[in-house]
Length: 207
Image (cartoon, rainbow, N blue to C red; front, side, top):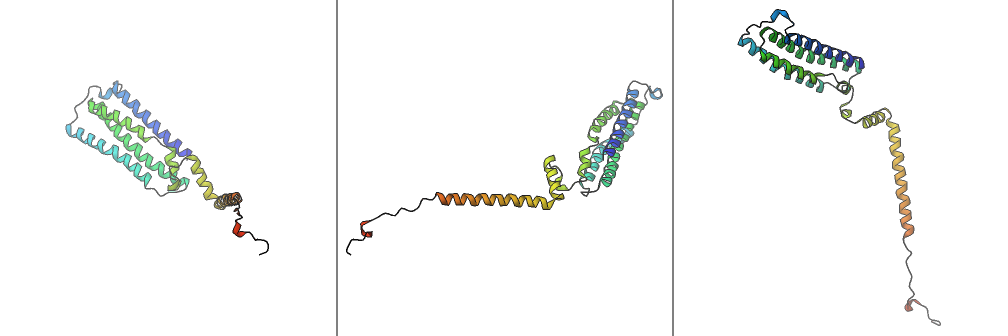
C-alpha cells in the first residue's frame, strides 16, 4: 500500500510540475513558436469549453463512484491495483484537458484558455492520492469511519472472539456477584419486628 501511494504521488507531483513549467513558458513567451498569437475559431473554443465542463465533474464523480461501489473488503494487492487504476484515469483525464488549454492559450493568447488552465490547476488539489481511501478498500463497511481505538478493538474482537466473550462473561459474573452481595446487605439492614406485650397476651396466675 505504501508503494502504491508513493507511486501515485510521484505521478501526481511530477504531472503538476511539468504542466506548470509548460504554462509558465507559455505565459512569458519562452516558447518562440507561437509568440504572436493566432485566431482560434469560435467553434473550437466552444468545444474546448464544453469538454472542460464535462471532463472535470465526470472524472471526479467516476473516481468517487468506483471507490464507493467497490466490494469491501478485498486483499491488499487487489485494492492497490484498483485504486491505482482509477487514480490514473482521474489524474490523466484532467491533465489532458489542462494541456489542451495550455496549448490553445499558447497559440491564440486567448484569456479564456488562461483562466480555464488556472481553474484546472485548482482542481488538481482534489486529486491528491490518499492513504485512507486505499485503506478503506481493505476493510469491512462497518469498520470504515471508526476512530483508531474502536477500529483496533473491533479487529481484536474479530480475531479472538472467544477471548472477548470470556471477558464479557467474567464481567457479567462479577456484576452479578456484586448485586447479590448488595441484596444480602439490604436484608441484614432490615430491623427485626418488635413484639409488644399487651395485657391480654399475658397469662394470669391461677388461670
